[in-house]
Amino acid sequence: MTDREERRITPPRGPDDPTAPETPLRRPGDDERVRRAIRSAIEADAGPLPPPPANTMEFKAMNVIALDHIYLAFDEPILEDVSLTAKAGETVAVLGESGTGKSTILKLLLRLLVPERGRVFVDGEEITQLNFDRALKVRQKMGMVFQGAALFDSMTVYENVAYPLREHTHLSEEEIETRVREKLDFVDLDPDKVMDQTPAELSGGMKKRVGIARGMANNPHIMLYDEPTSGLDPLTTGTITHLILKLQRELGATSVVVTHDVRSAFRMASKIAVLANRKIHFFGTPEELTGSDDPYLRDFLGGF
Image (spheres, rainbow, N blue to C red):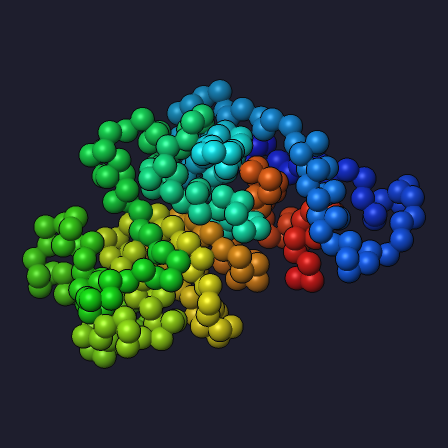
């Protein structure tokens, strides 16, 4: 494990420091002011991350997924000096406030976006300079579960799950049906009951499970999730979280999960990355996150 993977930004002296001066209790109206002050402290303290290992082959081999000092801007910077990694079989959850660039990380991994600076590795291959055809082949190693499932409304469940198989494989129709049944069964849906249904006939949780089945239809070893539990009740959220864990434990999938759901992230993740002010403010285990005295992290986690 590299120093960069475990690096956390050292916070300024906080209220739990016995040497810090006594401060008055925070009033409700002070919340936004406190957040701004914390963010200013983050900006002031955030230095450059250590470089990757000198041996580039070692860096490639040790990670299934890696973002290496990524900088991306449109009208304004979106990500600055962002680095994170995922080893084989790990689930990395990306947390952060709205608009911090969490979903942008997934687009970089899928090579839908190319950074202005930095490198993106998938299976040890640097993908930022690939042509379209080669990038498409790399993309087929990954399954994507979109926010809201993003199923085709005019297609049945069977046709939705079969779609990537028809687009990217040469399987016969009989083989496709076998694969669709297998994936629906894996996500705890009865193929005989749901295959002929349309998305409009499904509950929110069932749509998410069909989305996962479609994402894993081509047997990828990398799974990407964009807000997989958003808009779901607690019981259904638990079901989706269990499925992500099941993919990791039974199939050895390496996963990156973008989510606002802190409780779900703590249940499923091997590592957690917290994005703040366009940078990775924290990258480590859930236990390390809960044990942190960093004022921003404590404020972000709230009463968790």
